[in-house]
Image (cartoon, rainbow, N blue to C red; front, side):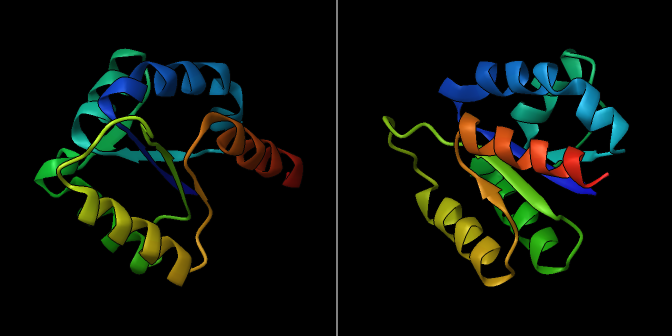
Length: 124
C-alpha cells in the first residue's frame, strides 16, 4: 500500500512524531511512503524511506493528486495547518477533491490518521 504524507510547515514536527509513533505498523504492513519535498526530507531524517515529490507550492500536491487519480496512492495523510493561509490553497483543494472523487481515504489531522492506520493493522 502506498500512503502519501504531506504536512504544512507548522505541522511537520507533528507528522514526524506520528510516523515515529506508528513505525511498527508502517513496517509490518509494508507501507510505501511518498511525500511532498520538505515533509519527505523531514521523514527521511527520522529514518523513514520516502519517495519525494516536489514541494507542495511547487507542484507536489498536484503530483500526489495525479498518483491518487492513477490508483497508485491508496491513502493520503495531510496534516493541514488550519490557522495559516496557504498561497497554493487551490492545489490543496484539488488534492482533497481528487481523493473524494476516487474514494481514497484522506486524513487531515492526527486523530483521523491514527484511526486509518489502526484500521489497516486490524485487517491483517
